[in-house]
Image (cartoon, rainbow, N blue to C red; front, side):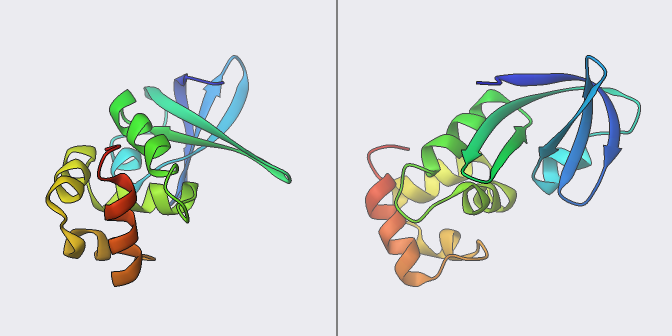
Length: 131
């Protein structure tokens, strides 16, 4: 729906950046790595994914399209919502996640808060042919 946002960074918080787009401040949930590259007052362009829930509309922002595509792909696995997918990208780069899944590296996935041994095994099985 909203492929990207572009404009000056109006504010930064621990998990959110506010990007001014056409006079409107768009709150965008980002990983710490993405937020670290942003500076208040400087121009930014973030690839985005809009997550629509019954009670909320949440915009997730990413440094590039590859990160966004991996974020959306991770959510196709059962039990993975946007917060867990974002946590996975906060710990591992998209390429590191691809390597972890292709090599069956449970340890890499259990390094993500919220993923235990059984969850890692399940994710490896579900994502092996997709990622």
